[in-house]
Length: 432
Image (cartoon, rainbow, N blue to C red; front, top):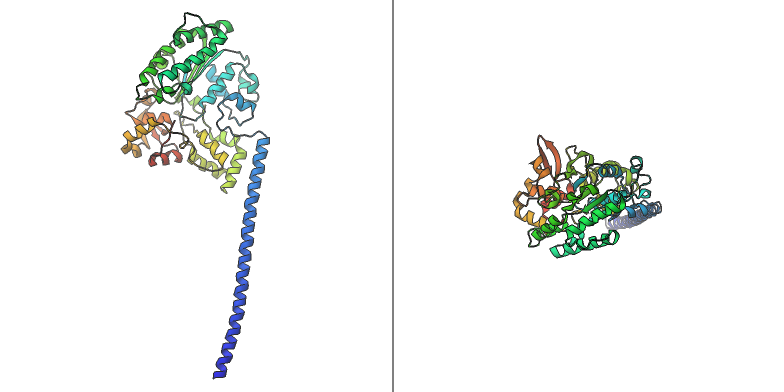
């Protein structure tokens, strides 16, 4: 019995040794397989990164550059940045009604639009080669353009006055100055008249981000002073209308009590017109047609088809509607940043901050969840001055609410997309 036990133990021991060898061998194989798998994965990642880099180099060589932060039309065209062609709408705007106002949220391309309009009025035909404008314009009249970028006007009456004085001085070097012209308003009137007389054609006046100094000073001691400067400064836009071909004013919010809106009773608010609904921002077709290579790169990064990626980008960055026609618009700032960084993050929300919005939200913090899918009278939304007692109006003009659908004589407002909804509900709401 003892011998049998010993023999059994010896056999068991041999079996265990064999099994250990097998297990050891199998573990070794698994380890090697894991090493090979990781190596392949690493090689695949390296290969994908190399392909991405080669694609990016190729796109750079082919001048397929993303227009991040580009607000100058000449730079856009000269340096071959991607440009979503809006020049048919620019031509219509330039050759339509004389006085026009457009409201759009920050970073939606208002300054680029103003720059494009400026280049058109200056007769810069070479910048429009290959664009829709070439099929529409035949004369290319060169006009004087008086251009104000009011975002440079600062946040006090003094800085606003200094900025306007500097702009007027630069034009007075070109068109001269009458010694009797002392006030800012009289100096502007003199420039308008002399530019018209010297050029022999009507001039254009462009005021970009007119509301910047007013927003920066809202509910401060400087606000009334800045508003009074505006009231006295822009009276000539009406008095010297015979000298003017076009006045174009952009902004975020609408302060109807200043002279631009109070005295220019012929000022047309094109902000809600179907034909200009996509004059700023990108439509879905514009994203697909202009950013095809970049979309492929981002889709590969997320292992998505381009179709699936577009659905995702629409959820993140689309959903804006600025007219009854409900023409869909994407946030251009977030789209370009997502394509540049190959990440679907909240770029527009995080881009800057503003105390006015925070004041509104603190005041109405309890009703924020109710703002999604809320009704507002369409005439009230389209015609009213910015009102701090009604968050819907201010948040719509600022881009945190948009038109979701038309309900009779009312609009249903709501959050345009996931980027805005997450920020609103999380109370993390930068704005400029």
